[in-house]
Image 1: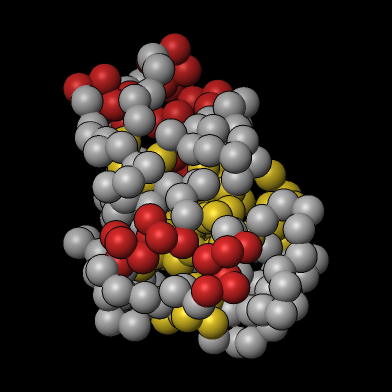
Image 2 (image 1 turned 60 degrees about the vertical axis):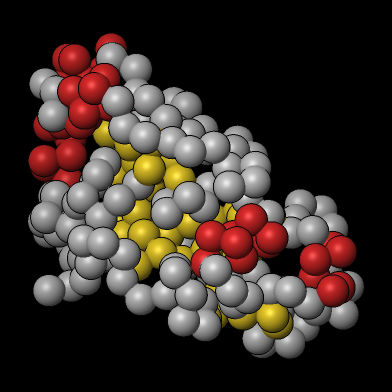
Length: 208
């Protein structure tokens, strides 16, 4: 895939995910895909993740949803390295089940990918992964840049294991020209010329 390396788990990554807290703090992770079961699964709780990651799991009160000023209390994994950072939201206040995880563009890149999509991926790269054009929300509201439909492509519906992927595109310090429609095709000439990249990736889990 252009611009996106083929990434796979290594023995080290597998050891880290199931290590004791002490080992999780000292063993480096390896670049790899986020799946429906790794490095976080729907069945994880705040307690299980804190046991697994030790000091690399920190509770934060004001994590951003990316929409308006709405925030939530969640768990941040690997908070000291912005290119490894994963934000975890839970289904309710008991924090006994994961609702979603989020990757952001704080470092303009990430060691993680979801189905091949990573922070910094271009429209063309994501369209190639999806196998067809998709629809993006216009860039004039709080929902700017979110994919609103994968149009039946490979990223549509549930990924293996039952989770779903959501993506948001944007471009720092540069307003999108005349791109205010609610459903803009990813192969739109003006959109491609402007060149937004993936700024946020969400993996959401079923509530069942």
